[in-house]
Image 1 (cartoon, rainbow, N blue to C red):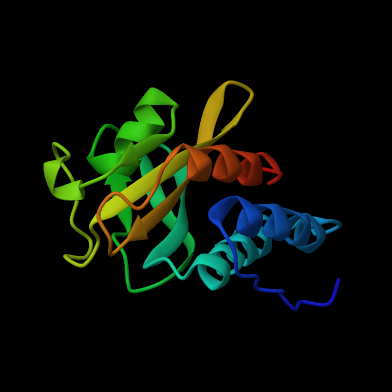
Image 2 (cartoon, rainbow, N blue to C red):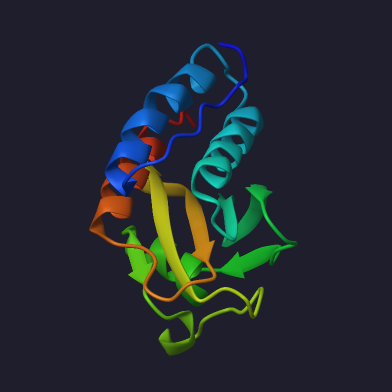
Length: 157
């Protein structure tokens, strides 16, 4: 596939529906994890214009920053710390409408207002998390969860 992303307008479902086949094409035949995570983060950032999109990889007893799009980020996160560490510990997607109200939130940027974190689970173990931040309160919902979980399922670890 040519590395051109076709950005579409429309409601959230239409945007995801158009983006997923493009992400599949970007991942197809590429075995390198870093390349694939980088392209997924870039595709999501380009399509939706979110404040921050990226991955944290499980390395030992912490999450370590992986490929991302956006301002500089926290480099290491402990299990059960912040939204990412909590998603890892619970092996579940977390949607946080207001990060200031989340106990133990890690403020990598004061501009982040809401967040969704989706774990990448393989062999019943969390291997990484996809972290998405918005500058708007209550930006993420069940539609984002559904499609972002579908997207992370495409990534081969």
